[in-house]
Amino acid sequence: MAIIVSQVKTTLEESSNQDRIWEAARKTARLKPEEIEKTYLVKSSIDARKQDHILLVSSVGFELKHPEEESLEQLMRREQEVLKRTQNSRNGQFVKIQHNPPQQFTVGNGKLSHPPVIVGFGPAGMFAGLALARMGYCPVILERGADVDSRVEAVQQFWKERKLSTESNVQFGEGGAGTFSDGKLTTRISDPRCSFILEEMIRHGAPEEIRYRQKPHVGTDLLRNVVKNIRQEIISLGGSVHFNTRMEEIILKDGKVTAVRTTQGEILTQAVVLAVGHSARDTFEMLLQKQVFLEPKPFSVGVRIEQRQQVIDRGLYGNHAGHPALPKGEYQLSWRNEEERGVYTFCMCPGGFVVASSSEEDTVVTNGMSEHARDAENANSALVVSVDGKDFGSDVLAGIAFQRKLEREAFRLGGRDYRAPAQSVKSFLEKSTPDLSKPLTTPSFSCGVKEANLREAFPEQINQMLEQGMRRFNRRLPGFADQDAVITGIETRTSSPVRVTRNPDSLQALGIHGLYPCGEGAGYAGGIVSAAVDGVRVAEQIMALYQPLQ
Image (cartoon, one colour):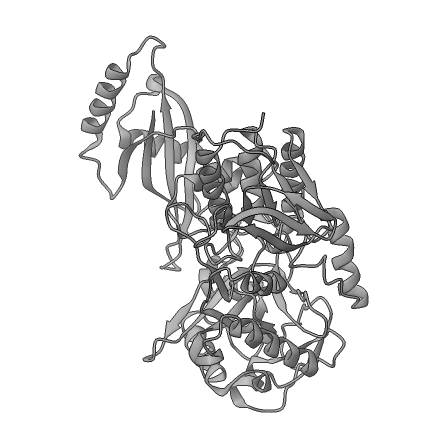
């Protein structure tokens, strides 16, 4: 049993004294020191709504001592006593009882003739593989890209020499696209599996702070080791991971999966977890040919906007900017017009870089990346506009065609050598000649930039929304889009343009037994944690049908 005390508020000056936070929470819960077995931080966030009075807001957990012989009835009675004792708590603080049962899996009675196959080793495929391996299902995992160390070499070569590998890049390879990102673990879903994901990441090398930070992140430098450690556990439990192995075809018979054909040969299987990520365009084309039911899905496109990190810190924290108790400033901004088209910031990377993220030749794609320290000079985020069938048509793969068109136009504007088109925010807003000589923010794009008019890349309605977003957001966060900010194009891989529709109960593709669309690429997640959770959910469905391999 744990007692959780939330809304414990302290000033920045008090925040360095953890004992003071513990004591305030203990008094709110009306607990005696001798009752407490363990005290720990559950959640920590910053309330900067009033820049002259910034507060640290904490939730504190207490694990209580109890005799080993205490029965369940006695434990529940004691819980009620604690709740009665704390029901009159003041100062806006709240007390609750929390139970954290371990993650449990149910095993079915069906017989597996062959191991389940997982296609893709991003967060969804990785955690599906970990769950299945722990229960004795010996999953076979296919990843079209390289292992993370070889993948880093290929990406660095692309960034330095502009030599692109279409199979191992920022989008494809061990860990998925998230490996070259900020490693953000913020999620909007409320699912008990989220705690399981965070605890497993910590167990495999992520920092402990992801357990309690309001906006947890790992950083691309630390995330690479986490990914390798999870892979090593899967292999130690009887699973296998095959890199540089692309699935070319799912083989079906009478509406059931029987095998997959790969670049290394055919693999027999009754269950395929399709966790390919949102950039596996050739896989979507193959599925359509196989008459797997796909739906076009809205997504967003736009640019990467960069500001100096100190400008963002000052805009958020005022005179407190730089205080050691404050994290690097982050923002999340959005606005919607009368036609319900939205413009918003996405994947914000404090103290980070804008990175070249192409997976197809003659295209330019941007993304953001930060290391754990977030100590680079610039902040960056995607500034994107929502698009749907009104923009690109109703064909199932029309969204992919729209993405490609924008990415190829960015390649042209950037000089056809993988540099990215870039300009100052000022020149974009004033519709003047692109100029990068005056802004104080230096573009950080990893392949270099070329001055260009980014309005040429987009339809006018998207340009108008980008302009509206810049002006509105700069009023809400001074410095967001001032004369020193720059934009780099283009951002197209915000989410999958396709959904591989599945049965909501069995999580199998409509009309196809044994095919489990999963994660962000299939249209069922939007980030590392939600994709990982979806991977575990799919693994649970497979386990509920079949016994482990003998």
